Length: 374
Image (cartoon, rainbow, N blue to C red; front, side):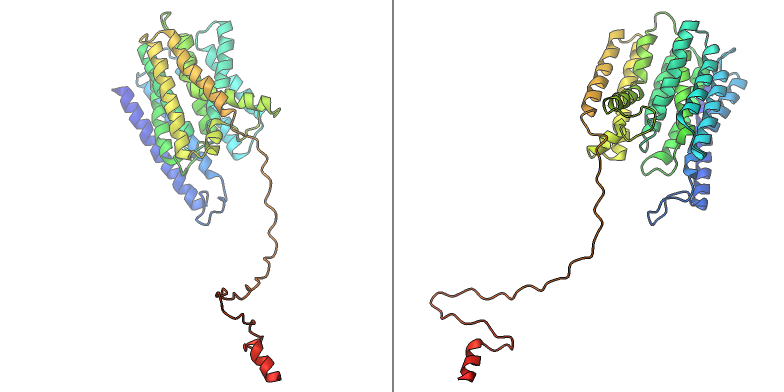
């Protein structure tokens, strides 16, 4: 009951903060103007801090009230994810390069792994997995509603896996995160009024990745964690694999963000932005259901190969959609040519009728003018 209350509180706090940020953005002219011109400032990217503050406050309060197990490793996860969120907020306000953000994520991942109880070798793999998943989920923030939909479904699946093992601390964090994402999604659905930005997207990705590592670290031997948890994050992993393969084939740089993600390719085949969010959400639901059934033992471990094979086929199909087509600029418009009046139309000849000469410029027939001259 306390976990449900925490989720409701997180939902209320995020909804309240996002409403206030949106109201402030309207006063500052940060939203799109009615004439279609771009906004004057980029305050809509402050939708992410609302979710960060909500999840952090609810989890800290829930831990203090005894809703999490003693000695939980959730508090180090919150501190590390908060540091990643701060770096993302700095990037939203004053863009940073890719390497400073990767360095901050790596340091935060080391802190999480240090409190997870993994062996040194598994800890190195866990650190790489956290950094990879953080950026994989963050890159889903390229279409209205895509990030919130996929991450909320993924958080629900992780919550089920953590609850099956009695990890109340992880359940508390995921409940607060899922509620915050749903509240933010009401403003981020197309047409988006607020955006999570790097702050919200990297915080969300880091929390989900860290929870994956914590669930795996405490999973009993009978759990197929190595199979279930990668399948749980299949949509984000598929998007990243698609981007890396596509840029490798096109000999393009790997780090700069481009319009070559799943959402961009689906938009090129005439799918709407809400349609893109729904398709990605359905893919996340299929992967999450399979992963949770495998983790809880209701399906054999090899069942995780089914959505993985579907993701591989999706990558092959999406690679056929051009992503780097060169669009030629339109030629400049010149002066419009002067309109030429159409030539007068003559009636069609009637069979057996004597041909008549066309009228003279004065309006009288040419035969009458000839008679006058005679």
